[in-house]
Image (tube, rainbow, N blue to C red; front, side, top):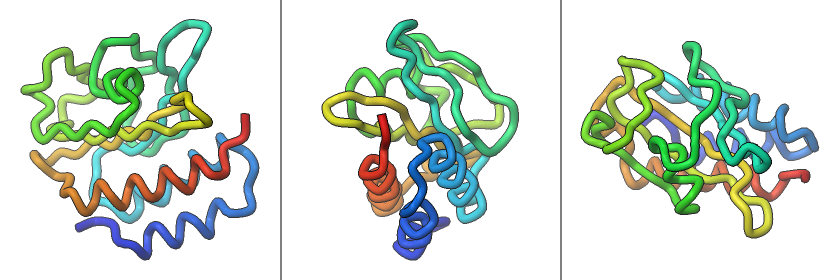
Length: 151
């Protein structure tokens, strides 16, 4: 398993005194990428005026810049306000393929109050790469980010 409870503790320490959402998302992305064996780790933020997701801080190859509501795994997580785990992205109807190397994906919403303000998106080259335990740890990371969200 690429990450552990130690990863959560390290990220909590890393972002505990920072008030910039962008800086915190950047450091979370970098730390998760260094700990995990993933293809892409990053955030999309909600552009409420345009009603779409916009690329935020990330680690990995070039990514899709904007994702429309109702299109793909990230939009499903945003609209449904819940974590979405996809063991095989090629079987996900409406999947937005930013990289042909991605085979499984997890997306976790970041909430501020009652609104989803961003999503954490992690893509793996391996099929079925996200265990329930690992998803729970990633959700704990996001809880730390939500606790410090400014806006």
